[in-house]
Image (cartoon, rainbow, N blue to C red; front, side):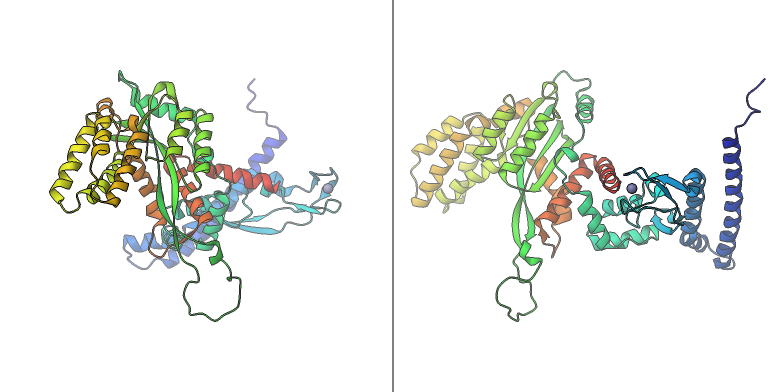
Length: 475
Ligand SMILES: [Zn+2]
Protein backbone atom coordinates (compact mmCIF):
# COMPACT_ATOMS: atom_id res chain seq x y z
CA UNK A 1 0.00 0.00 0.00
CA UNK A 2 1.40 3.43 -0.91
CA UNK A 3 1.83 6.00 1.79
CA UNK A 4 0.67 8.80 -0.45
CA UNK A 5 -2.91 8.42 0.58
CA UNK A 6 -2.16 9.14 4.21
CA UNK A 7 -1.78 12.80 5.03
CA UNK A 8 -1.24 14.13 8.46
CA UNK A 9 -3.47 16.78 9.92
CA UNK A 10 -0.65 19.34 9.74
CA UNK A 11 -0.12 18.61 6.09
CA UNK A 12 -3.82 18.87 5.42
CA UNK A 13 -3.94 22.26 7.11
CA UNK A 14 -0.94 23.41 5.18
CA UNK A 15 -2.51 22.44 1.87
CA UNK A 16 -5.72 24.16 2.74
CA UNK A 17 -3.87 27.31 3.78
CA UNK A 18 -2.03 27.24 0.48
CA UNK A 19 -5.22 26.87 -1.50
CA UNK A 20 -6.77 29.75 0.40
CA UNK A 21 -3.73 31.90 -0.16
CA UNK A 22 -3.89 31.19 -3.89
CA UNK A 23 -7.51 32.17 -4.05
CA UNK A 24 -6.81 35.37 -2.19
CA UNK A 25 -3.93 36.14 -4.51
CA UNK A 26 -6.04 35.58 -7.63
CA UNK A 27 -8.67 37.92 -6.31
CA UNK A 28 -6.14 40.63 -5.61
CA UNK A 29 -4.50 40.10 -8.98
CA UNK A 30 -7.84 40.66 -10.71
CA UNK A 31 -8.27 43.92 -8.86
CA UNK A 32 -4.75 44.95 -9.82
CA UNK A 33 -5.36 44.13 -13.46
CA UNK A 34 -8.55 46.20 -13.40
CA UNK A 35 -6.60 49.16 -12.09
CA UNK A 36 -3.90 48.73 -14.73
CA UNK A 37 -6.44 48.49 -17.53
CA UNK A 38 -7.97 51.76 -16.43
CA UNK A 39 -4.61 53.49 -16.77
CA UNK A 40 -3.72 52.21 -20.24
CA UNK A 41 -4.84 54.65 -22.93
CA UNK A 42 -6.66 53.56 -26.08
CA UNK A 43 -4.42 52.13 -28.81
CA UNK A 44 -1.35 52.56 -26.70
CA UNK A 45 2.24 52.30 -27.77
CA UNK A 46 4.33 49.61 -26.16
CA UNK A 47 6.06 52.28 -24.10
CA UNK A 48 2.73 53.54 -22.79
CA UNK A 49 1.81 50.05 -21.67
CA UNK A 50 5.16 49.29 -20.07
CA UNK A 51 5.10 52.62 -18.31
CA UNK A 52 1.80 51.82 -16.61
CA UNK A 53 2.90 48.30 -15.74
CA UNK A 54 6.25 49.62 -14.45
CA UNK A 55 4.55 52.17 -12.25
CA UNK A 56 2.12 49.65 -10.79
CA UNK A 57 4.24 46.52 -10.76
CA UNK A 58 5.39 46.96 -7.21
CA UNK A 59 1.83 46.82 -5.95
CA UNK A 60 1.56 43.41 -7.56
CA UNK A 61 4.94 42.03 -6.57
CA UNK A 62 4.58 43.45 -3.07
CA UNK A 63 1.24 41.76 -2.67
CA UNK A 64 2.59 38.43 -3.93
CA UNK A 65 5.37 38.72 -1.37
CA UNK A 66 2.84 39.46 1.35
CA UNK A 67 0.81 36.36 0.52
CA UNK A 68 3.87 34.13 0.29
CA UNK A 69 5.09 35.41 3.66
CA UNK A 70 1.68 34.77 5.20
CA UNK A 71 1.70 31.26 3.78
CA UNK A 72 5.20 30.39 4.91
CA UNK A 73 4.79 31.85 8.38
CA UNK A 74 1.17 30.99 9.04
CA UNK A 75 2.00 29.73 12.51
CA UNK A 76 3.95 32.78 13.59
CA UNK A 77 1.10 34.97 12.34
CA UNK A 78 -1.44 33.17 14.47
CA UNK A 79 0.81 32.60 17.45
CA UNK A 80 -1.06 33.39 20.68
CA UNK A 81 1.57 32.65 23.30
CA UNK A 82 5.32 32.61 23.59
CA UNK A 83 7.81 32.17 26.43
CA UNK A 84 9.79 35.31 27.22
CA UNK A 85 13.26 34.73 25.75
CA UNK A 86 14.81 36.25 28.89
CA UNK A 87 12.80 35.05 31.89
CA UNK A 88 10.85 32.18 30.34
CA UNK A 89 7.51 33.49 31.54
CA UNK A 90 4.59 32.66 29.24
CA UNK A 91 3.42 35.74 27.34
CA UNK A 92 0.10 36.30 25.57
CA UNK A 93 -0.29 38.14 22.30
CA UNK A 94 -1.34 41.76 22.69
CA UNK A 95 -3.02 42.35 19.37
CA UNK A 96 -1.45 42.39 15.92
CA UNK A 97 -0.04 45.81 15.08
CA UNK A 98 0.59 46.51 11.46
CA UNK A 99 4.01 47.26 10.08
CA UNK A 100 4.78 48.22 6.52
CA UNK A 101 8.27 47.63 5.23
CA UNK A 102 9.68 48.61 1.86
CA UNK A 103 11.54 46.19 -0.36
CA UNK A 104 12.86 46.17 -3.91
CA UNK A 105 9.63 44.47 -4.97
CA UNK A 106 7.41 47.01 -3.26
CA UNK A 107 5.83 47.73 0.09
CA UNK A 108 4.92 44.72 2.21
CA UNK A 109 2.39 45.09 4.96
CA UNK A 110 2.61 42.76 7.94
CA UNK A 111 0.02 42.43 10.64
CA UNK A 112 1.79 40.33 13.25
CA UNK A 113 1.28 39.43 16.91
CA UNK A 114 2.99 41.45 19.59
CA UNK A 115 4.13 40.18 22.96
CA UNK A 116 5.27 42.13 25.98
CA UNK A 117 7.00 40.93 29.10
CA UNK A 118 6.09 43.15 32.04
CA UNK A 119 8.86 41.76 34.17
CA UNK A 120 11.62 42.30 31.60
CA UNK A 121 9.94 45.42 30.20
CA UNK A 122 10.56 44.36 26.66
CA UNK A 123 8.33 43.76 23.65
CA UNK A 124 8.70 41.05 21.00
CA UNK A 125 7.59 40.50 17.43
CA UNK A 126 8.47 36.86 16.70
CA UNK A 127 7.58 37.20 13.02
CA UNK A 128 10.02 40.09 12.56
CA UNK A 129 12.76 37.87 13.92
CA UNK A 130 11.70 34.90 11.80
CA UNK A 131 11.79 37.12 8.71
CA UNK A 132 15.08 38.67 9.79
CA UNK A 133 13.69 42.13 9.17
CA UNK A 134 15.83 45.21 9.29
CA UNK A 135 14.83 47.75 11.93
CA UNK A 136 14.65 50.25 9.15
CA UNK A 137 11.57 50.66 7.03
CA UNK A 138 13.73 50.12 3.92
CA UNK A 139 14.77 46.51 4.00
CA UNK A 140 18.15 44.89 3.33
CA UNK A 141 17.73 44.54 -0.43
CA UNK A 142 17.06 48.27 -0.79
CA UNK A 143 19.88 49.17 1.59
CA UNK A 144 22.28 47.03 -0.38
CA UNK A 145 21.30 48.58 -3.70
CA UNK A 146 21.58 52.10 -2.26
CA UNK A 147 24.99 51.42 -0.70
CA UNK A 148 26.20 49.93 -3.95
CA UNK A 149 25.07 53.03 -5.86
CA UNK A 150 26.47 55.44 -3.28
CA UNK A 151 29.82 53.70 -3.56
CA UNK A 152 29.94 54.82 -7.19
CA UNK A 153 28.36 58.27 -7.30
CA UNK A 154 27.63 61.12 -4.88
CA UNK A 155 24.81 60.46 -2.43
CA UNK A 156 22.41 62.87 -4.06
CA UNK A 157 22.98 61.40 -7.50
CA UNK A 158 22.64 57.91 -6.05
CA UNK A 159 19.28 58.83 -4.56
CA UNK A 160 18.07 60.26 -7.86
CA UNK A 161 19.23 57.23 -9.84
CA UNK A 162 17.66 54.86 -7.36
CA UNK A 163 14.31 56.49 -7.88
CA UNK A 164 14.66 56.71 -11.63
CA UNK A 165 15.66 53.10 -12.09
CA UNK A 166 13.42 51.39 -9.58
CA UNK A 167 10.50 53.73 -9.05
CA UNK A 168 11.28 53.55 -5.33
CA UNK A 169 12.57 56.28 -3.09
CA UNK A 170 15.74 56.15 -1.04
CA UNK A 171 16.94 59.44 0.42
CA UNK A 172 20.59 60.48 0.35
CA UNK A 173 20.34 60.99 4.08
CA UNK A 174 19.38 57.35 4.74
CA UNK A 175 21.98 56.14 2.25
CA UNK A 176 24.57 58.04 4.26
CA UNK A 177 23.44 56.37 7.45
CA UNK A 178 23.44 52.91 5.88
CA UNK A 179 26.96 53.36 4.49
CA UNK A 180 28.09 54.55 7.94
CA UNK A 181 26.70 51.46 9.66
CA UNK A 182 27.77 49.11 6.89
CA UNK A 183 31.38 50.26 7.04
CA UNK A 184 31.63 50.57 10.81
CA UNK A 185 34.76 48.88 12.10
CA UNK A 186 35.84 47.49 8.73
CA UNK A 187 39.47 46.44 8.67
CA UNK A 188 41.65 45.23 5.85
CA UNK A 189 40.70 41.65 6.68
CA UNK A 190 36.97 42.34 6.50
CA UNK A 191 37.32 43.54 2.90
CA UNK A 192 39.91 40.99 1.82
CA UNK A 193 39.15 37.92 -0.24
CA UNK A 194 39.79 34.67 1.61
CA UNK A 195 43.08 32.79 1.32
CA UNK A 196 41.27 30.20 -0.81
CA UNK A 197 39.95 32.84 -3.20
CA UNK A 198 43.40 34.35 -3.60
CA UNK A 199 45.00 30.92 -4.06
CA UNK A 200 42.46 30.21 -6.78
CA UNK A 201 43.33 33.36 -8.71
CA UNK A 202 47.03 32.57 -8.37
CA UNK A 203 46.43 29.04 -9.65
CA UNK A 204 44.54 30.38 -12.66
CA UNK A 205 47.44 32.61 -13.67
CA UNK A 206 49.99 29.88 -12.95
CA UNK A 207 48.26 27.30 -15.09
CA UNK A 208 50.40 25.95 -17.91
CA UNK A 209 53.47 27.99 -16.95
CA UNK A 210 56.89 26.86 -15.84
CA UNK A 211 57.62 29.91 -13.72
CA UNK A 212 55.72 30.83 -10.63
CA UNK A 213 53.65 33.94 -11.33
CA UNK A 214 54.83 37.31 -10.10
CA UNK A 215 52.80 38.74 -7.26
CA UNK A 216 53.36 42.43 -6.68
CA UNK A 217 52.84 44.32 -3.46
CA UNK A 218 52.80 48.04 -4.27
CA UNK A 219 52.71 50.63 -1.50
CA UNK A 220 52.01 54.30 -2.08
CA UNK A 221 49.92 57.27 -1.07
CA UNK A 222 47.48 59.56 -2.87
CA UNK A 223 45.80 62.81 -1.98
CA UNK A 224 42.29 62.99 -0.58
CA UNK A 225 40.45 66.29 -0.11
CA UNK A 226 39.47 66.46 3.57
CA UNK A 227 37.77 68.94 5.82
CA UNK A 228 38.53 69.35 9.52
CA UNK A 229 36.26 67.99 12.25
CA UNK A 230 35.68 71.59 13.34
CA UNK A 231 33.64 72.12 10.18
CA UNK A 232 30.88 70.09 11.85
CA UNK A 233 29.82 72.54 14.54
CA UNK A 234 30.37 76.12 15.51
CA UNK A 235 33.88 77.17 15.99
CA UNK A 236 34.67 77.73 19.65
CA UNK A 237 35.60 81.23 20.73
CA UNK A 238 33.95 84.57 20.47
CA UNK A 239 30.72 84.85 18.56
CA UNK A 240 31.28 87.07 15.64
CA UNK A 241 29.24 87.74 12.55
CA UNK A 242 31.01 86.48 9.50
CA UNK A 243 30.39 86.54 5.84
CA UNK A 244 28.76 83.37 4.53
CA UNK A 245 31.79 81.45 3.54
CA UNK A 246 33.21 78.23 4.84
CA UNK A 247 34.79 78.77 8.23
CA UNK A 248 37.18 75.94 7.65
CA UNK A 249 39.88 75.32 5.15
CA UNK A 250 40.00 72.17 3.09
CA UNK A 251 43.13 70.11 3.41
CA UNK A 252 44.73 67.56 1.14
CA UNK A 253 45.67 64.52 3.12
CA UNK A 254 47.39 61.37 2.10
CA UNK A 255 45.44 58.16 1.74
CA UNK A 256 48.10 55.54 2.25
CA UNK A 257 47.47 52.23 0.68
CA UNK A 258 48.73 49.02 -0.74
CA UNK A 259 47.65 46.70 -3.47
CA UNK A 260 48.50 43.08 -4.12
CA UNK A 261 48.19 42.03 -7.75
CA UNK A 262 49.43 39.41 -10.16
CA UNK A 263 51.30 40.38 -13.29
CA UNK A 264 50.49 38.37 -16.35
CA UNK A 265 52.32 39.90 -19.30
CA UNK A 266 50.70 43.27 -19.81
CA UNK A 267 47.72 42.30 -17.74
CA UNK A 268 47.19 42.93 -14.03
CA UNK A 269 45.06 40.52 -12.02
CA UNK A 270 43.79 42.36 -8.98
CA UNK A 271 43.84 40.56 -5.64
CA UNK A 272 43.49 42.98 -2.78
CA UNK A 273 43.56 46.70 -2.10
CA UNK A 274 43.43 48.65 1.14
CA UNK A 275 43.52 52.43 1.20
CA UNK A 276 42.85 54.71 4.15
CA UNK A 277 43.76 58.14 5.41
CA UNK A 278 46.00 56.66 8.07
CA UNK A 279 49.37 56.79 9.75
CA UNK A 280 52.41 54.81 8.63
CA UNK A 281 51.91 52.69 11.72
CA UNK A 282 48.34 51.83 10.79
CA UNK A 283 49.36 50.98 7.26
CA UNK A 284 52.07 48.68 8.60
CA UNK A 285 49.60 47.07 10.97
CA UNK A 286 47.18 46.37 8.11
CA UNK A 287 49.96 44.73 6.09
CA UNK A 288 50.96 42.66 9.08
CA UNK A 289 47.37 41.42 9.41
CA UNK A 290 47.33 40.33 5.78
CA UNK A 291 50.57 38.46 6.28
CA UNK A 292 49.47 36.81 9.52
CA UNK A 293 46.11 35.78 8.10
CA UNK A 294 48.08 33.76 5.53
CA UNK A 295 46.36 35.46 2.60
CA UNK A 296 49.48 35.58 0.43
CA UNK A 297 50.62 32.17 -0.88
CA UNK A 298 54.30 33.11 -0.83
CA UNK A 299 55.58 29.69 -1.85
CA UNK A 300 53.38 29.69 -4.95
CA UNK A 301 54.51 33.03 -6.33
CA UNK A 302 57.53 35.23 -6.89
CA UNK A 303 56.79 38.12 -4.56
CA UNK A 304 57.94 41.58 -5.52
CA UNK A 305 57.53 44.74 -3.46
CA UNK A 306 57.48 48.08 -5.18
CA UNK A 307 57.47 51.37 -3.28
CA UNK A 308 59.13 54.76 -3.04
CA UNK A 309 62.21 55.52 -0.97
CA UNK A 310 60.65 55.78 2.52
CA UNK A 311 63.10 53.94 4.76
CA UNK A 312 60.54 52.62 7.23
CA UNK A 313 58.65 50.85 4.43
CA UNK A 314 61.69 48.88 3.33
CA UNK A 315 62.67 47.99 6.84
CA UNK A 316 59.19 46.77 7.52
CA UNK A 317 58.85 44.90 4.22
CA UNK A 318 62.15 43.13 4.82
CA UNK A 319 60.95 41.89 8.17
CA UNK A 320 57.57 40.84 6.81
CA UNK A 321 58.52 39.35 3.44
CA UNK A 322 62.27 38.66 3.67
CA UNK A 323 62.41 36.81 0.34
CA UNK A 324 60.60 39.38 -1.77
CA UNK A 325 62.37 41.11 -4.62
CA UNK A 326 62.49 44.83 -3.80
CA UNK A 327 62.07 47.46 -6.48
CA UNK A 328 62.33 51.19 -5.97
CA UNK A 329 59.53 52.72 -7.96
CA UNK A 330 61.15 53.94 -11.16
CA UNK A 331 59.05 57.11 -11.39
CA UNK A 332 59.89 58.21 -7.87
CA UNK A 333 63.53 57.49 -8.61
CA UNK A 334 63.60 59.46 -11.84
CA UNK A 335 61.95 62.42 -10.08
CA UNK A 336 64.97 62.51 -7.80
CA UNK A 337 67.30 62.35 -10.79
CA UNK A 338 65.38 65.18 -12.41
CA UNK A 339 65.92 67.44 -9.44
CA UNK A 340 69.68 67.12 -9.74
CA UNK A 341 69.55 67.48 -13.52
CA UNK A 342 67.55 70.70 -13.29
CA UNK A 343 69.62 72.46 -10.62
CA UNK A 344 72.97 71.28 -11.92
CA UNK A 345 72.34 71.78 -15.63
CA UNK A 346 69.44 74.23 -15.39
CA UNK A 347 70.89 76.60 -17.98
CA UNK A 348 71.56 73.85 -20.49
CA UNK A 349 68.50 71.80 -21.45
CA UNK A 350 70.51 69.63 -23.80
CA UNK A 351 72.99 68.72 -21.13
CA UNK A 352 70.10 68.08 -18.76
CA UNK A 353 68.48 65.54 -21.09
CA UNK A 354 71.77 63.96 -21.94
CA UNK A 355 72.67 63.43 -18.29
CA UNK A 356 69.22 62.06 -17.46
CA UNK A 357 69.27 59.60 -20.33
CA UNK A 358 72.79 58.42 -19.57
CA UNK A 359 72.05 57.99 -15.87
CA UNK A 360 68.82 56.11 -16.46
CA UNK A 361 70.56 53.86 -18.99
CA UNK A 362 73.31 53.10 -16.47
CA UNK A 363 70.78 52.24 -13.79
CA UNK A 364 69.13 49.87 -16.26
CA UNK A 365 72.49 48.18 -16.78
CA UNK A 366 72.90 47.67 -13.06
CA UNK A 367 75.59 50.35 -12.70
CA UNK A 368 74.23 52.06 -9.61
CA UNK A 369 77.69 52.03 -8.00
CA UNK A 370 79.15 53.86 -10.97
CA UNK A 371 76.36 56.43 -10.88
CA UNK A 372 76.98 57.06 -7.18
CA UNK A 373 80.73 57.38 -7.82
CA UNK A 374 80.19 59.94 -10.56
CA UNK A 375 77.80 61.91 -8.39
CA UNK A 376 80.44 62.02 -5.66
CA UNK A 377 82.95 63.42 -8.15
CA UNK A 378 80.48 65.82 -9.70
CA UNK A 379 81.38 69.51 -9.24
CA UNK A 380 78.30 71.17 -7.88
CA UNK A 381 77.29 74.34 -9.70
CA UNK A 382 76.14 76.04 -6.51
CA UNK A 383 75.07 75.36 -2.96
CA UNK A 384 71.60 74.23 -3.99
CA UNK A 385 73.03 71.79 -6.53
CA UNK A 386 75.44 70.48 -3.91
CA UNK A 387 72.54 69.82 -1.58
CA UNK A 388 70.50 68.00 -4.24
CA UNK A 389 73.51 65.92 -5.26
CA UNK A 390 74.14 64.99 -1.64
CA UNK A 391 70.48 63.94 -1.23
CA UNK A 392 70.53 61.86 -4.39
CA UNK A 393 73.71 60.08 -3.31
CA UNK A 394 72.03 59.20 -0.02
CA UNK A 395 68.88 58.09 -1.79
CA UNK A 396 70.66 55.83 -4.25
CA UNK A 397 72.98 54.44 -1.58
CA UNK A 398 70.02 53.52 0.61
CA UNK A 399 68.25 51.89 -2.30
CA UNK A 400 71.19 50.26 -4.11
CA UNK A 401 69.65 46.84 -4.28
CA UNK A 402 66.34 48.18 -5.54
CA UNK A 403 67.31 50.14 -8.62
CA UNK A 404 68.61 47.32 -10.79
CA UNK A 405 65.88 47.95 -13.31
CA UNK A 406 67.53 45.83 -16.01
CA UNK A 407 67.42 42.79 -13.74
CA UNK A 408 63.83 43.51 -12.74
CA UNK A 409 62.79 43.86 -16.37
CA UNK A 410 64.48 40.62 -17.39
CA UNK A 411 62.77 38.77 -14.57
CA UNK A 412 59.40 40.18 -15.64
CA UNK A 413 59.06 42.32 -12.52
CA UNK A 414 57.41 45.70 -12.85
CA UNK A 415 59.64 48.72 -12.27
CA UNK A 416 56.93 51.34 -11.83
CA UNK A 417 54.09 51.56 -9.40
CA UNK A 418 51.46 51.96 -12.12
CA UNK A 419 49.54 49.17 -10.44
CA UNK A 420 48.92 51.19 -7.33
CA UNK A 421 48.50 54.48 -9.17
CA UNK A 422 45.58 52.98 -11.01
CA UNK A 423 44.17 51.60 -7.76
CA UNK A 424 44.29 55.11 -6.32
CA UNK A 425 42.39 56.26 -9.35
CA UNK A 426 39.64 53.66 -9.45
CA UNK A 427 39.24 53.26 -5.71
CA UNK A 428 39.89 56.77 -4.44
CA UNK A 429 39.87 59.52 -7.01
CA UNK A 430 36.78 58.69 -9.05
CA UNK A 431 34.58 58.85 -5.98
CA UNK A 432 36.39 61.15 -3.56
CA UNK A 433 37.88 63.79 -5.82
CA UNK A 434 34.87 65.65 -7.06
CA UNK A 435 34.61 69.37 -7.44
CA UNK A 436 33.57 70.94 -4.17
CA UNK A 437 33.77 67.70 -2.24
CA UNK A 438 35.76 67.87 0.97
CA UNK A 439 35.44 64.82 3.17
CA UNK A 440 35.53 64.34 6.89
CA UNK A 441 38.36 61.87 7.37
CA UNK A 442 36.00 59.34 8.95
CA UNK A 443 33.62 59.51 6.00
CA UNK A 444 36.43 59.38 3.47
CA UNK A 445 37.75 56.24 5.12
CA UNK A 446 34.29 54.67 5.17
CA UNK A 447 33.95 55.30 1.46
CA UNK A 448 37.44 54.03 0.74
CA UNK A 449 36.75 50.84 2.70
CA UNK A 450 33.48 50.32 0.85
CA UNK A 451 35.14 50.81 -2.52
CA UNK A 452 37.98 48.47 -1.57
CA UNK A 453 35.34 45.84 -0.74
CA UNK A 454 33.74 46.35 -4.14
CA UNK A 455 36.98 46.04 -6.06
CA UNK A 456 38.25 43.18 -3.93
CA UNK A 457 35.04 41.32 -4.73
CA UNK A 458 33.93 41.18 -1.11
CA UNK A 459 31.03 43.65 -1.08
CA UNK A 460 28.41 40.88 -0.74
CA UNK A 461 30.22 39.42 2.23
CA UNK A 462 30.69 42.80 3.88
CA UNK A 463 26.98 43.41 3.49
CA UNK A 464 26.09 40.02 4.95
CA UNK A 465 28.29 40.76 7.96
CA UNK A 466 26.50 44.06 8.45
CA UNK A 467 23.11 42.34 8.27
CA UNK A 468 24.26 39.73 10.74
CA UNK A 469 25.58 42.40 13.13
CA UNK A 470 22.31 44.32 13.03
CA UNK A 471 20.22 41.21 13.62
CA UNK A 472 22.33 39.95 16.51
CA UNK A 473 22.16 43.41 18.09
CA UNK A 474 18.39 43.28 18.03
CA UNK A 475 17.97 39.84 19.52
ZN1 LIG B 1 10.66 38.29 30.64
